[in-house]
Amino acid sequence: MSADSDTGASPALPSSDAAARSSGRFYPWYVSGVLMLAYVLSFLDRRILYLMVEPIKADLHLSDFQFSLLTGGAFGIFYTLAGLPIGWMADRYNRKNLIAIGITAWSVMTALCGLARTFPMLFLARIGVGVGEATLSPSAYSMLSDTFDRKRLPRAMSLYTFGIFIGVGIAMIAGGELVQYVQQFPDFNLPVIGTLRSWHVVFLTIGIPGLIMALWVSTLKEPPRSGPAKPVSSGKGFPFAEVFGFLFRNPLMTIALFVGPAFYSILSEADSWYPTLFIRLWHWNVVDAGSINGLSSLIAGPLGLIFAGWYSSRAFNKGQTDACLRLTAWSAAGICLPAICLPLAPSGEIMAALLFPFKFFIGFVPVLIPSAIQMVAPNHLRGQLGAVFLFTTGLIGTSMGPILPAYLSDYVFTGTYALAHALAVTALIVGPLTFGLIWLGLRQYRDRYTALTAAEDS
Image (cartoon, rainbow, N blue to C red):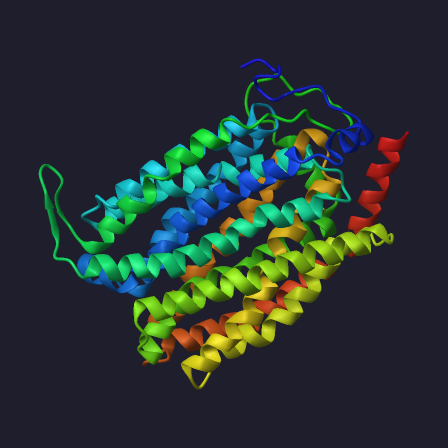
């Protein structure tokens, strides 16, 4: 592929030109909104699985640990690994086309989950979902950083990241209703395909709409790349040496931007076990368990996003260039109390109430860290550094978030409260560790930002 306007490798614009290009126009916000809807769809496909833990486990004869491998193993690891080459592609080729192809892939693979008859078949289909979804965020981060100036980027990231909580909310609320509705019917017997259980039907139902979303994304305009231009290497292979060089030259900043948020994501991904906790401990039905988890995501998550985007932009405008990173560290401290107390709550109602502060703090990282990375990333490494962020959060968080509590529940703790104790212990260890890892890199982050802006102004 050639590096022309069709591939997205456009000549870079000075950052001031990019700001003028996007300032005061509706279209950049339209782009952010469409990408947000794609994010909604990705989380719907990702999280609906957790409303069907018990029937899938029963049909396929799985333990909690085996079930967690469908998310942390099949989805999480391959989502993580695929992000690196996709980030490389996002820095060179047409990003909105990459996203459209990815949406098509994950939607088809979600539908194929509805045809799985064995654990290996479902495992392979979940791998396909993970690889498809890996195209979205590296490409979206890069597109948004070329569409908005630095002062508005956190707010644009906030809008995009709304998709997490809307997707989780829809998956929990509408998904709960869908799961309960199809459970009322006997198994479906279809020619060629054979017998379909209720959970098969759910996967088939939510997979098909993604094809329409893929067509919509393909109509977006590919934005010119902004910032100081650097020729893209035409050599063979993936030139990750530049990425590693950037990371190793700023080791404390690297820990703060990539390792700390990865541990934070262990807490956010452990949240996927909460619907099961309501069902097991308090005997709620799937609709009630899904509704409270969905409502907390729809209400508290966006409030966290809005606050994080507003406060960090306000602090940045006042000269606090490390505002995004600093606020993330404080949110890691703030989330500890609800994350520890929630699974140990003495009633389902108290547990439900604690979901709201928990989801509020979860809303900080998805907007603050991608914004912080894009503010200090060289133009030609934006997509790849976004992919590194997804790689570390995927390797540590998306993979270990579901697996670690499940492992502790099956092999360390015993009894009815085994999963609850596992979730509480995970939060007790991970929360303070996350705060320290992020705080460690604040000074080096400020120095890097100052050096980059000085280079742009010269």
